[in-house]
Length: 95
Image 1 (cartoon, rainbow, N blue to C red):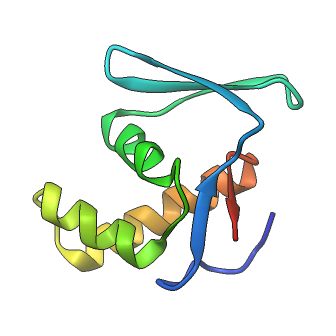
Image 2: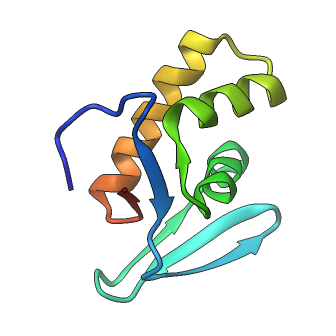
């Protein structure tokens, strides 16, 4: 876990230690180590799909702004906020 803000060049990837499945188009993840379950809304689920393979934060923002009606600045802020939450829960890792 890191308190450092995410930069566009930071590469992130989903943790391999989670059990995940899709339920009604949303990702449900379970951490056996933490004894916790997580649910991601449709946009969070899309981000999860994109970080299943290593990708940079900048590439995430570019991809999402092409898929959703959002400004690059708002998208970047929202993506960084979600990544910080996912990292705090051990759901993603920086490479």
